[in-house]
Every structure is written in structure tokens, then in C-alpha cells.
Amino acid sequence: MTTGNTTVEQILITPPTIEVSELSVRYAGKHGAVDALADISTTIEGGEFLALVGRSGSGKSTLLRAIGGLTRARAGSVRVGNRAVSEPPPQVRFVAQDYSQSLLPWLTVRENVLFGERHAVQSSHKFKVPVEEIIADVGLSHAIDRYPRELSGGMQQRVAIARAIASRPEIILLDEAFGSVDALSRATLQDLMLDLWRKFGFTAILVTHDIDEAIYMADRILVLSPNGRGLAAQIPIALPRPRRQIETREHPRYLEYRRKLLESVLSAPSLKSAEAA
Ligand code: ADP
Ligand code: MG
Image 1 (cartoon, rainbow, N blue to C red):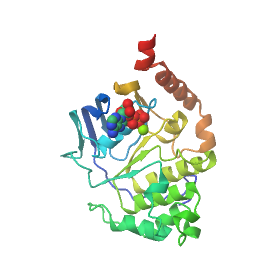
Image 2: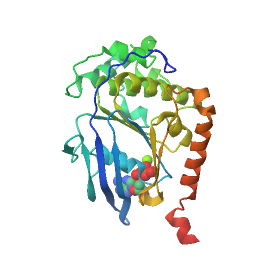
Image 3: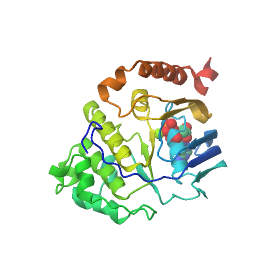
């Protein structure tokens, strides 16, 4: 496998369907309750690449955390396969924005990824990919015996991704996972993730405030309304795969999606500006 989603051997698994039904989440904040998410329903097919976009505070992370069993529903439910989520489902892994906190600093790249493998999901698919192959997949073979502090931010995030993959998840939840690196590293991380997604066949759910990133990567985009008021729009992205940084972004349909999404994100007034008006 090489970056740029070219030659990819496929190791396909069959991730479970995720069913979000009339989900609402309320936080008990210091200054009273915060309704972070209202009445969200959607079905996420096994192997889908879904993106969640919306203004800051629209509940993107809350929805991701609810799917990952880290946040309790006030009403409604999340089901992963045939089980209602009340704690983190075993087949799920998170990749967060802050790579510096997610790696174990006293372990090398290889040892960090082995750590992921040792905490692998017990599941039906029997394949085992050596950690060296996964480390090669994220382009870090040359740095396999280095420590996190010896790596750039983009490289550290690649280790975090490799570690998640080594645990053979069926569902990967990415919260602004490419948001802390420079633009070129970001494009590389996007392509790496698409390559891995194609090779392993997991379901990917990506939270991002970057509309272009969402279109470039996803099969479908959910736009969340400001202040947790629910789903504003749902846009299937019918762009050919494999996606390519230049060609995909120049595709005529890409520009249509971009316009639609910008309209949807910008036109939905935030509650605060509506109150001020
Ligand atoms: P997004 O990821 O779209 O920026 P979040 O899901 O992080 O939005 O937050 C949605 C709302 O819930 C925001 O108003 C935020 O301040 C609030 N919120 C998030 N986490 C907590 C928490 N642990 N306690 C109280 N309020 C929270
Ligand atoms: Mg967030």
C-alpha cells in the first residue's frame, strides 16, 4: 500500500450498523443544564465513511462521544449492531486531536503500536496484520524505534492512528483528528486515513469543522444545527473513489457540495444571534 490511495490490498471486515434513534444529550453545567444534542436520528452502515460538521458548540463531539459510549443519552438511544450502547462498545476506537496526550512517551513507535495490538478488539475477523506492516502503512518504518518526542506532530498523529488500527477496530471515531498539524501534513493524514479505511474496511466517523475535509473524505455528511438543536442537513457525497487531493477538489460536483454545505452551515442561525436580532 502506498500513500495517495493507489495500490491497496483489501482486508475487509464487516462492521456492525450503528443506529442513532431520537438521541438527545443534556449536560449538567455549572450555570445550569446545557442541551448539547436534540433528537438526532441516523443509520450508519457498516464500512461507511461519515463526517459530522457544524459550528463550534453544535454537538459534534457530543454525538461522537455518545456513539463511543462516553456520554449518556438523556433520551433516545444508540445501538451498535444488536446492542444498546451504555458503555464504550468493544469494537470502537477513538483518535483525538491531541496526539501529545494519546501516546505513551516512554514507549517507542513500535512499542506504542504493539500496545494497541495487545488491547485488540476480540471479534469475529481472524486476520492479524504485523505491527511492522501497519507502521509501514502510515509511512513510519524509518522511525520505528524512535520515541514520540523525537517525532513531528504529524508523525505522532500517524503513530496514534497506527495504534488504533493495530487494535483491529470495526469503528474508528476521529474528533478533529487532523486539526493540529500544518496543511501539508493534514493532506497526508487524510490520504493515509482513506488508504487505511479502504484496506481494513472499518466504519469511520470524522468530526471536523473543515467543510473541504468532510467532502474530500466522506460518503455522507451530517450538518448539525447550532447550539445542539439537531440535524440541519444530510448530504450524500457521490464523488468517485479513490479520492485524490487535486482531481477530487476540482470535480464539478465537489464545488456543488461545497456550496450546499456552506449554505447549510452559514444559513442556520445560531441561537445567540437569533436572540440578538
Ligand atoms: P462541538 O464539538 O460541535 O464543538 P460539543 O459537543 O463539544 O460541540 O458541545 C456541545 C455543547 O455542549 C456546547 O455548548 C458545550 O459547551 C457543551 N458541553 C460539552 N461538553 C460538556 C460538559 N462535559 N459539560 C457541560 N457542557 C458541555
Ligand atoms: Mg468538538
